[in-house]
Length: 198
Image 1 (cartoon, rainbow, N blue to C red):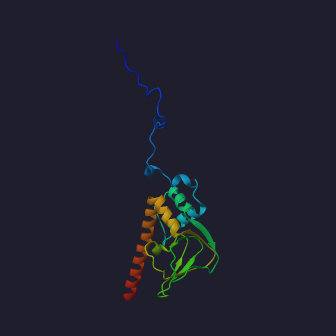
Image 2 (image 1 turned 90 degrees about the vertical axis):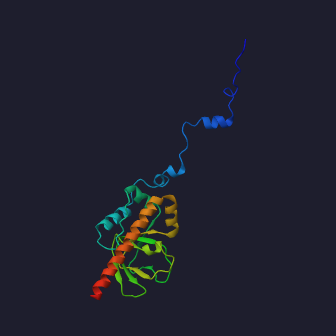
């Protein structure tokens, strides 16, 4: 006697229902996606491997030792450039604003403070140059030159910003390691001043 009405929606779905109904799982939230590591080479570059090995062995206060995994090194190197510089090349000029971080892979650099001219340091492989530029926009006071053919990894300010936006965890490890170099250098200079006073 009574008939049940037929639901017409099951027979003819709207295009929106078909589109959203076809997806079995929800899209991943962008913060959960690993955008950095999927877009870089699968092998760590030889320059990064050499630099990391030299930094681990170095006893210098300028040794850069970030808590990077192999995957972190691959991501980091995808934001950097590698340059080979000839002997007596002036890398950093005092009084100029240079916001580029440099990491010595091979060769050596001679660094002199442009303010006093007294504190000269030899920077060997594994060292970082320009770590103060991470925290200051002021012109630098360092005069840095190559002593021999030198290979450096460079991270410019625009690429630092891209690294920070794309991979904040790696950028944070970079900042911590650079801060550790600044702190070690500060302790070493304080110790030298204390010894000179006695």
